[in-house]
Length: 149
Image (cartoon, rainbow, N blue to C red; front, top):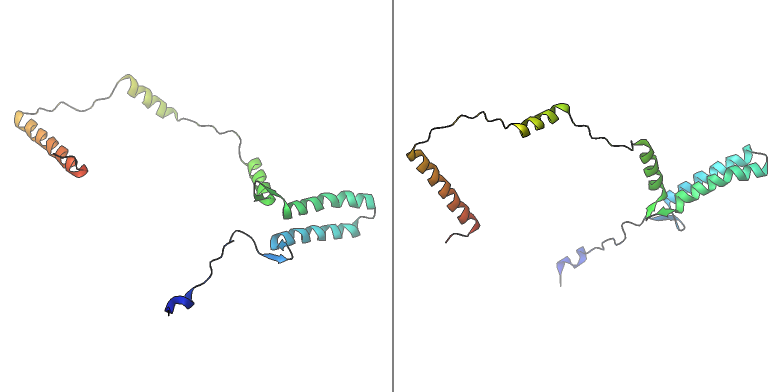
């Protein structure tokens, strides 16, 4: 008999699906429709003319239904509206401004290379030491990548 059998639990499968609260509606959908319904209900008492009431309540009903049910490219309509407002607030033209000093430095370096170093006198013994160091570094590299003979 296995001792760990009772420790098993189910892993949730659909974590991206929102919970249904009121019938087939989620909490967000219920709130969008309730707010739209309350606004239309308030308009019913404020507007006496039936034609004007219908004209005023139709956009509110469409907006609340769109917020509750409409999805564009698999994303809720609310995200689409936030993207529209964000796009209208950001600048449309991006300009890259180069600093004038950087341009002059680039031109100077292309026309005349600056060499501030002075020539160094190296005798034969120093050149042999440099050559040996170079060869030892190559051998170390060969050992590191395992190509040595």
